[in-house]
Image 1: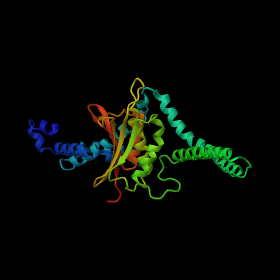
Image 2: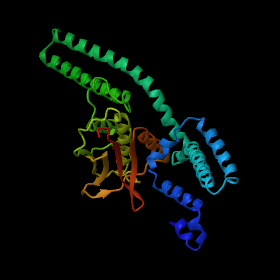
Image 3: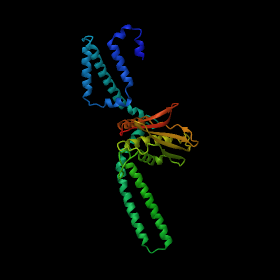
Image 4: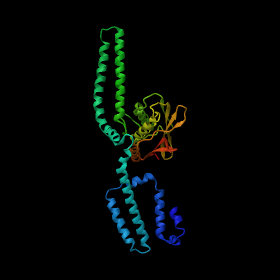
Length: 332
């Protein structure tokens, strides 16, 4: 708009092909969807020197070309320059993404979390074996106790303890399963994977972070039964990031605990499955969620883009009020 308005005093601009070409390029850049920009930049490495060479040759030939070929060469050189500039900007953004980690915990906290995630798979595999041994020994003990010559009262007490050990062992095995299959597009022994499956696993994975029973989590909406076999892991990671931030909003700066609920609503639009995460206080009034640190938010956004999805915080009065997850539908 500014370019078009600024050309009004200069009458010769209306008859200049270069002016109209620049106006068209700027308009196309303004209307280009954001999700398309990262896709366009995922090109082979050889395209960068090729764009530099083509752009330089077009720019050189532009000064010697006539009024007919000149605008075409100018457009080609501008497109090459825009492609190179966007690639450099994206590269710098990825390199400088480490600066986003400088929050309250600093770089060490983010690095520790990333490394813990990498070594967790091996540790979980080692923990599974002792649990199997405990489970087998507990079953054998239950069989032996049933054949011991003891009074019924003592037998019942031992059976209760055996049952308690079995319950806690199964709970620990379930937690291990959640961690082993976290963020993967499938789970062992599962069939069809839906939005509800992913959200329920995210809730189960983050349940330990609530630390008190005053916060309830509710699922609702018409999109819970939508199948997401190729986006299951990404949806689970996005939901965990949103839930961790949502749960932390129920703790005051002085350590006080507040009651409320977290609502996860899944709806279907013509092009997306939209999941919103809202925090409500004990009076059912909306309350702002805590912000996600820059490094985690950037990483989750990249995961969402890889899965043809979108993860963002909807701001209200400069405070994150809710999280919105958009999954691109593949059934249309």
